[in-house]
Length: 385
Image (cartoon, rainbow, N blue to C red; front, side):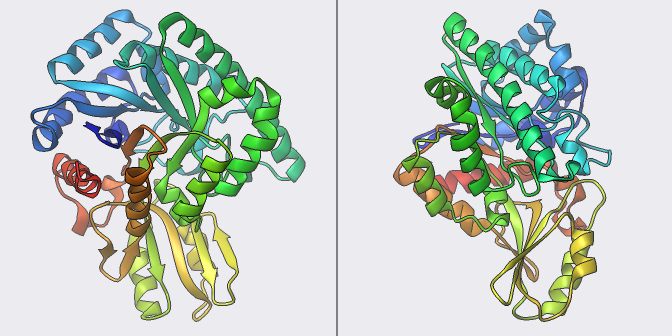
């Protein structure tokens, strides 16, 4: 939806289907029901996720035409894509493979270029964004030298995409930006690492004005929350350094205050242990230092009572609840980020991204269209739109 503070959508990575016909069938089954609840009388924005095979399928102009016709009939429009998950994202074990293939590969580069050409055909306005991975997964590389080499190779592939995006802009007038999404344990794992890479590696590698136009930040509130990165300070730094934000991804993580009822809260958290997605943990120790774990099982194995004040867990939980029984969430960071966006907008794209409905504890399992609609209404209320 168009709001006074930017375009608002939800991301279709919640829906299954890696080939286009299967994913399109899911969109047709669920999106109209969501729209009827949240935007019955105006166009609704839709953030699409095309898996690699779907991006290949959509090279067929007849399929693009069919999609455009359906969007028009349903009074929908597209302004952003999620290009982070390349392959399977549902009904398989994803874990660290969500980063594969990474930006060191031509496969990731070529996939992103296909997405850009598709988005250019779908855009109604002159700006669109594609969120993508934080270059790679850091634990695939054993040394700092290997990680540095991977970063440089990834950066070169991104610059090759920028050249294509420049050509698209000149030919069509559509400006598309790639929105890099820092994530715990990514090669760019947090705000500080992203800013350092952008300023010290990316910008010096090419035409700075062209790079700022076509490579931007995906501000994922869940990831910022897990990393203990404060929204206000982070956004202020981005503005001061003229680093553009292509998209806010609105998502919430688990926060566990271990200063009371510690044992009961750890037992409650174990209900969220599941085999599909990575659930990185950043822990604040009582001595003020931080400890990081690749996944929940590793955190549970290392857990010692009376050691930690707080855990934050990369587990996307519904936006409309601040507490999950004994467990809390980073909903506070959502409210803070959106308050800044309302006061002084720093991006034009807002996308809700809760994709873990299928692996949440049973108490939070409700019909998918109702879940999505409730999330959108929550954000509409926070925006006052």
